[in-house]
Length: 231
Image (cartoon, rainbow, N blue to C red; front, top):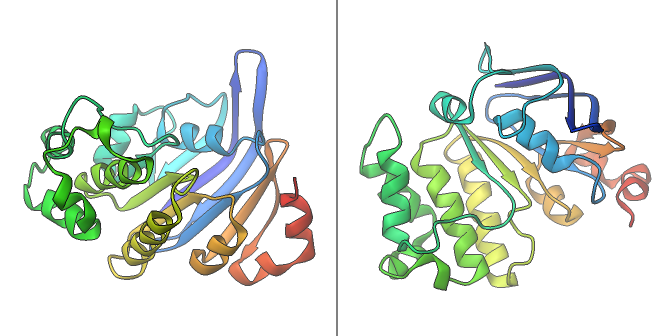
């Protein structure tokens, strides 16, 4: 589904990624881990087209998308939820979902119903402005907006960061359901080792802009993993 080869990225003269290789099979949940500042968000931004890579290749479903614009990647089936609960704060929950739907090719209203079925809490908040939602509710809305595009791969940047525990559980359950029941491939940046153990099929750990360690979910119990993630 996704093949990243030799990916390099920089902000001006400051290089962040130094030849990252990563692959995600169809239906797989891959977790990207590592300390703060090692390049996890830069990797996702480069994969989704938010940041143009300075080297390497990104292939999605057999197509070279390295130089494609973000909206073109969304049309191919990438759904990206960046860090920070991004929504349109002045629009209601319903309007946030509707605006996203109108930007898609399919424009099938059932996609909104399907997203709300994953996050039923939002059904009671459809008339509320997104800016008045809690952080956890905004994160659910951000993921729901991505789901309205009907992605084949969902790319999530720390979806549980700074969220109240009750909604963390709901988001974790939603990700697991999308992965196991809906068959959506997931690329997940996550700091919490226990959550990764519960959800991931495989993982990579970044350190200094390169992949230092990778393996299956069982390998997450390795002492080397704990050392690489230690603050």
